[in-house]
Image 1: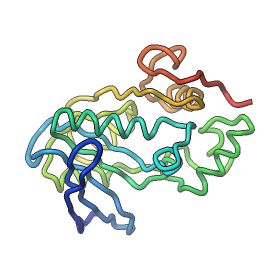
Image 2: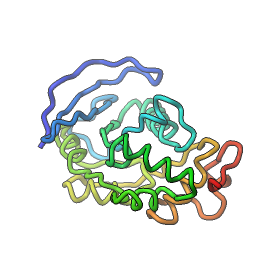
Image 3: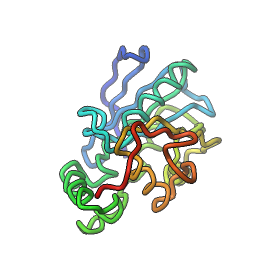
Image 4: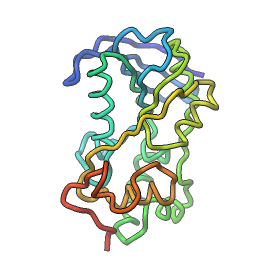
Length: 212
């Protein structure tokens, strides 16, 4: 289902990682950022992260994707062992153009779920089978998965990877992300704090309200 076809040492702000590129059966490329000797180990610290061009490259404040990716790399660097699987699943799998179309509907007051449905698109199209296959290629038997999304836990289990522990992955979120996070919690089952998302483990800089 996947093919490993490129590898290099990649120096980053979080230290040196081993960067491996995989191609899935649909021709899409995914990345594994590996720290330390994880081959054959269990309970490996792991993050399955989906691509977010708007947040990670253009510093959009509509989501917390970049801060979640950075936190995962920081945790792995501190432990000097772990892996980030970076999946090319922009917009939870609907693609960049459709994601921007959905953003346009959100400007009119729709939340992320309703915006997708108004476009005739599913809430989330991601399939974690490829991520599981990458972990198998790395000979990892079980992971401690950094996520707030139960679908990722179930997706890896269905793909044959044991999730020995779910690690809470709450980050500091930008101004406009509070309503986005609330929707993920209340409508998509993400395990985020109850009540005001500006409090507890998730801090929202500058507050954040449902768009008018």
